[in-house]
Length: 212
Image 1 (tube, rainbow, N blue to C red):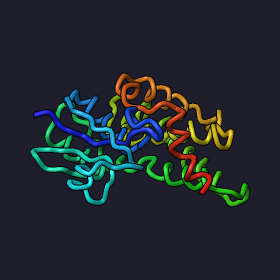
Image 2 (tube, rainbow, N blue to C red):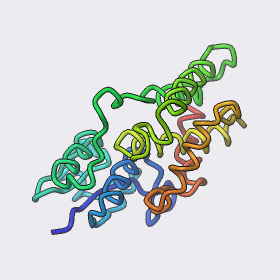
Image 3 (cartoon, rainbow, N blue to C red):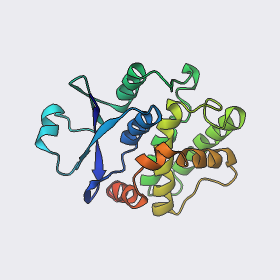
């Protein structure tokens, strides 16, 4: 029985895949493991009744395994790894949190209205730490082999690149060559091309948060 997965539909285009990095992380995992699935695009501004019945908190991603609906991308990715262990995407435990602060720091910098509040520097410091790690262990976080850490970072780095480029005219410093090579490598993967939202939907998705 095919897995069913509920993911965000694009803002203003309910028939198009939306811009949720946590949904994309799950889709990337399924693609990398070549697990077939059926997608339900959920318009978060107008959630279908059946979706709220099976998932009262209304969050995506949501996946159906063995007639049971499960939410939370961390839990889902863990379950997919358990049920479809080959190829393994489990990172060594000591690498599980590499780059984990990049996304919250990106969001803080994106929403920041004060150029001197240190948010930009905090993000640059996290990107530098990732660059240093990749320099010693790359091209992926765990060397030659892609793992769940990379699949979690890929959509977040894509959002960072698109949203900061659009709203702040900001780009990742050129000096961080390993991060630049890493994003090229991730964004060039077949799985990524098939699961990422178009840039205009990423921009639309962040617009309300930036202007809040």
